[in-house]
Length: 108
Image 1 (cartoon, rainbow, N blue to C red):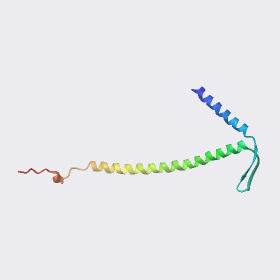
Image 2 (image 1 turned 45 degrees about the horizontal axis):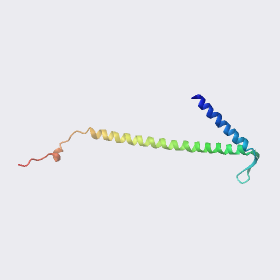
Image 3 (image 1 turned 180 degrees about the horizontal axis):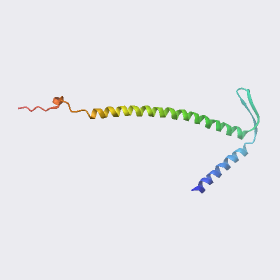
Image 4 (image 1 turned 90 degrees about the vertical axis):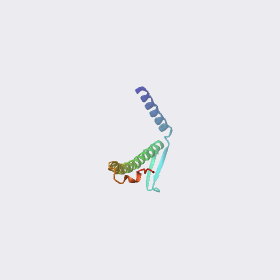
């Protein structure tokens, strides 16, 4: 099994390396309407940096989403506990004397 993992790792590295070597053009990157400017940057670096920043943004958004979902789970568990205790208390009620409504009267 480890051979297959290493094989896929080598193939993936070769694909990334081939992509980088085929995009060696030099470009100028402008941010915020020419306020920040990077000159003579290879295109593959720009693409990988954009991908890395996208992954970081996705990670931050996912962290906030997980925190929100965990808080909702806590709230639902609390509500479930309250309903369970209410159900248990209703199950433990004694049979009262008001069971005359369920008596069947015999007709003679």
